[in-house]
Length: 109
Image (cartoon, rainbow, N blue to C red; front, side, top):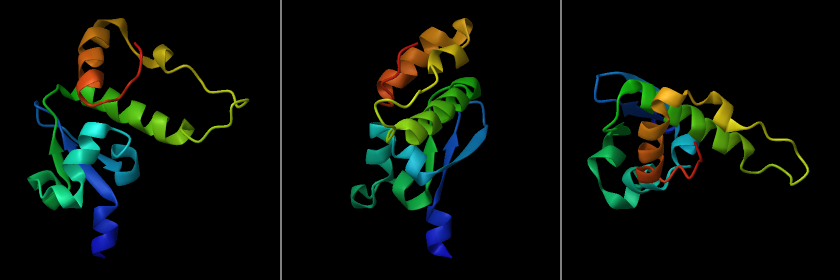
């Protein structure tokens, strides 16, 4: 039962929205991986909840990108991978770029 609980991580935005993502997906972010590491003893690791200092629209897109990254990270070189940039609205691109830098998302907007 506890292992099933640890399979999911809650990401909470500054405006109070919660996003549940699989731990494997959250671990695609270096920052989240460090926060959620059992060895870190951070409160995030104990509660499986990370408070993201971003608006919900940014956290949602961050979750979407981490899912995308998790899905395609093992892709073969000849496999066609859809362009993530098409999913990013111009009005959030700067804010998303800053969040990506902090959360080690490494995606171009």
